[in-house]
Length: 401
Image (cartoon, rainbow, N blue to C red; front, side, top):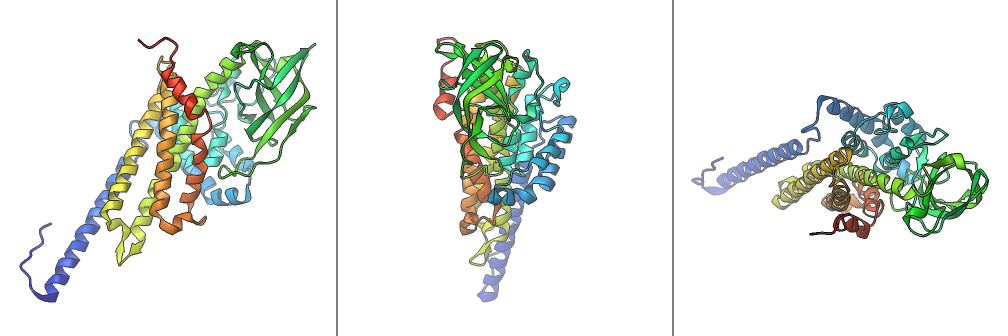
C-alpha cells in the first residue's frame, strides 16, 4: 500500500497514522491466516484419517476442554469420559480388533492423541497408556482389557517374583504408577531369574490380589486428572497363568512397548502446543497496550511464527517415527527416541512462550495456557530420561563405522 507523504498539518499526520494502522491490521490478519493455514493438522492425511481426526477434535472440544480446569483443580479422575472415548474406539487404538482394539496404525494413533490432547493433555496421556499391544500377541491363558492396564517400570531390578508351585510370590514396589489404586490390572516387570535383562519376566496382577497395596496419592505439578501412587507388593501371589510370554521375555516386551510410548507422549505434546499457539494468537488479537493490539507488535508476530514453525517440524518428526515403527524399519528405535527427545522439549518451549505472551494473565488458572504448560512438563521426564533417549540413538545394535 502506497501512502502519500505530500500532506501538511495535523490532519495529514492523522491520515498517515490511520493509514499505517490499517496496514498493520491488514498485515496481522494476513499473518494470522497464514499461521492457521500452516498449522492445519490434516495435511497429507487420507480421507479416513481426516474423519477420525475430526471425531477426536470434536470429542476434545465438547467432552474434555469444558472440564479440563475442573479435573485439574479438583483432581478428578474422569473415568466416564474415558469410557465414552473408548466407545469411539480410542481406548485401544492400535490393539488388534480380535482382542477389543481398533486395529489402527501407529500414525493413526498419533493423529488421534494429538487431537484429543487439545482438550485435556492429562486425560489423553492416561488413555495413551495402552502401549503393551505386544503382550496381547503373546500366549496368555487369561484375557485382559488393553485399556485397563497401568504402566510399569520396565527394567526394575528390585521387584522380584519367586515361583512356588502354580504361583509367583511377588515382592517389591513400583513408584509413580499412573492410575495406581484406581485401575483394575497392573502389568509388572519383575525379576524371576538372574542379573541382567534375561532375568526379567512380565506378570499381570489384578486389583484385589492379596498383598497388593498402594502408597499415598502424589501431589503433582500437572497430570492432575489421573492419580499417581506407588504400587506395593508384599508376598503377593500371582498365578503362573498371568505370566505374559516365557520367563525372561519381560524386558523385550517392555522395550517394544517403550518405543510406542515415546510416540504417544510426543503426540500428546503436539496437541498441547497446537492449542497453546492458537490461544496465544487469540490473546494477541484482543489484548491491547498503549492503544494498540499486541498483534501489531512485529516482535510478537515473529515469535508466533517461530512457534508455529517448531510445531510443524515436531509434527513431521513424530509422524515419520510413527510410520517407521509401524513398518518395523531399522531406524524405528532411533526415530522414536529422537521424536520423544526433540518434540517434548520443543512443545514445552512453545507452551511456555505462549504463557509468556499472555503476560500476567498467563499465570492465572483462569487461562488454559498455564495448564497445558504444566501438564506437558513431565513429558520431558517420562518414557525414558534424556540419557536413555540419547543412548537409544547413539548406541545402535552394530558398532558405528
